[in-house]
Length: 359
Length: 277
Image 1 (cartoon, rainbow over the protein chains, first blue to last red):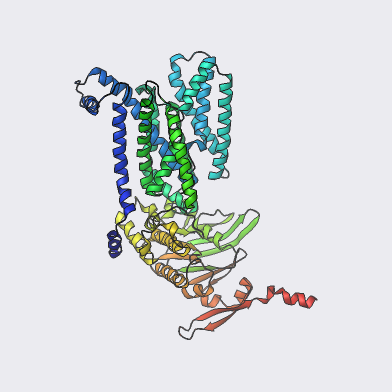
Image 2: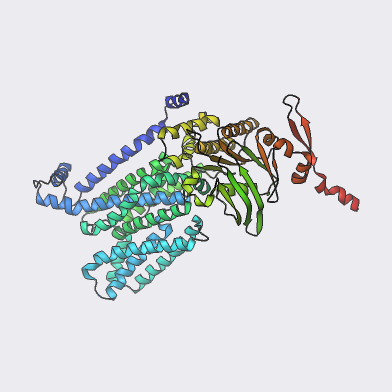
C-alpha cells in the first residue's frame, strides 16, 4: 500500500500544484484588494498611512492623524469590510446552491431570496413614506424589511416544494421561479404608485451599492453573513456527499432533507442580509464558483474557501473601480459586476458547450 | 451474533405491490445472493434492508433493534449500500470518491484507520493505478469498481468485533468476466472477515460459485432460500426464470454448472398457436 502511495507521489501533477497554490494566491489577492480599497478614493492615501492608522488603532495608541483616522476607520473600513463579506457570502451561496441543485446555473436568486428582499425593500421605500414619515428610521427599516422579505420568500418556496416529507430540488426551482415572478410584480406595482423621489431611491437600491456603509448599519448584516462563513467546514464535506447522489449521501449517513433545509436557510439568511445593506449585486454568486470549479475541480473542501476568498476580492476590486472610474460620481457596483459578469458568463457557456460539458 | 433480519415485508409502490410477505436473514460471515427475474423486487428488497425504502408491513432489525430506531449516521456505520446505478457526474478524483466512503467515520475514528481503509479498498477492487484519475473519464466498468471501493471502505474496520452489512445491487453488471469473479471473490473474503454481504446477481453460475446461500425472488415473494447447489435445480429455474437449463458437472472442480438450453416451453406459445390453428 505504501508502494502505491510512493508511486503516486513520484508523478509530478501540475493540477495538484495549482490547487495547493490556489488558496494562498487568492489570500494575497484579497489582502491587496483590502489595502487598495483603504487607500484609494477622494483623499488619496498611501499604504503606510493606512497601516499606521490601523496599527495605532490596534495598539491603542493615538499617534495617527485624526483626519486620516476618520477616513480610514469610519468611512473606508466599514465599506471594505461590507464589500468583502457581501462578496464572500454571495459566492459561497452560489457554490452551495449549485451543489444542491447539481446545476452550474443555480444562483441565490432562484430560491426567491432576492425577489422577496427586493419586494420588501421597495414596499418599504414607497409605503413607509405613505403611512407616515419614517425619517431617519428608514436607514434601519429598509435593511430589516429586505432581510425579512428575502427570508420569508425563501421559506415559502421551500414549504410549497415540500411533499410527503421530501423536497425535490426541481420543485424548489419551479416554485422559486413563481415566487420570484410574484416579487417582481409587487416591485412593479410599487414603482407604479411611487413618486419621482421614491422611484429614484428604488432605482439606486436596485442597482446595488456599498456606499452608505457605516458601522451601525453594517454590523447586524455582517453578523448574519458570518454564519454561513463559519458553517463552511461542516458544509464542504456534506456538499461533496450530495454530489455523489442523494441516495448515496443518505446511505453515508446524511439526513438529506434536513441538510437541504439547513443550506437553503443559511443562504437565504446570508444573501438576505447582503441584499439588505448593499442592494442587488448580480453575477458574483453564479460566476465565481463556476469559474473556480473549472480550475480546482468539484471538491468543496477547496471550492468553498476559494469561492469565499475570490468573491470577497472580486467585489472589493469592483468597488475600487466603481469609486474611481468617474469621480466624484460612483458607478453602482451592481451595474459593474453585471457589465463584466454577463459577457464573461456567456463566454463560459460557449466554451462549455464546445467541450460538451456543463461543469 | 448480530444478524440483519427482514420479516414479512410488504412494500407497495404506487398501485403495485412490489414485495409480499418477504423475509430474509443475513448473518455476519455469509454471502447471500439474491436471484430472480427482472421486476421480481430484488432492488426494492435491498433498499428495504438498507432502511432506505419504507415498508407497509413488516420490520427490519439489526439484532434486536429496529432499523428505524437508528439515526442515519449511526446506520451509516453499520451498513453500506451500493445502488444499481451511480449518479455521480462530477469530475472528482477516484481517491476522493473512495474517501467519501469513510465520511461516517471522519470524526469518530483515527485518521490513519480511514486512510488504511481507503488504501485497502483501492487495492481489493484493483483500482490502485486509477487513484489519481478523474472518475468521469473512466469506463463504466472502472466506475463501478470505484463505487464498490467506496462501499468497501465504508464497511472496513480495524477490528472485527462489530457487526456490519454490505448490500450490493448488481455489483457486476458492467464488469468484464475476470472482474466479475474478482469482485465476488472480494465480497466472499469480506464475508469471511465478519461482514454480512447481500448481492443481487443475475448470473446463476456466479451465484452458485461464490454465494454461501441464495434467496430466490419471484413476483415479490421469496420462493426459495438455501444452499445454492440444492436450490438451483432445473425445475425451480424453469418455474422462476422461464428458462430450460441442464446441469453439467465440471470435470475439474466437480461443481455442477448451469447451462441454459433455451426458453422454457411454458411461454413458447408458438406451439400453442400452431395447435390452435
